[in-house]
Length: 96
Image (cartoon, rainbow, N blue to C red; front, side, top):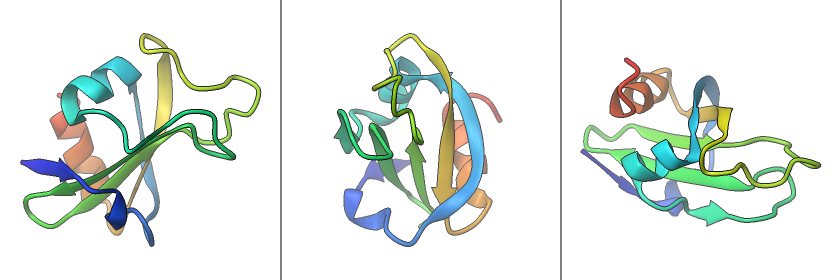
């Protein structure tokens, strides 16, 4: 279905959003590629789907809020090379 691969996130751009919890993202995709206090991103998943579509899921500019809590409902950014990234992420999360 997919695998995490942090080497694939470069060159993607914002394609859409998904509202969910960090716990649901981890349950669905596994541990994030990056997790911790960062400059503009504190959580980052880079996903390669079996059909070759690359998607990234990340928070953006949470400066004062820090890393999202596991149960915090938050709007995450979805990056990719096409809108297919958004569709596949939402399907994997049961939202599409």
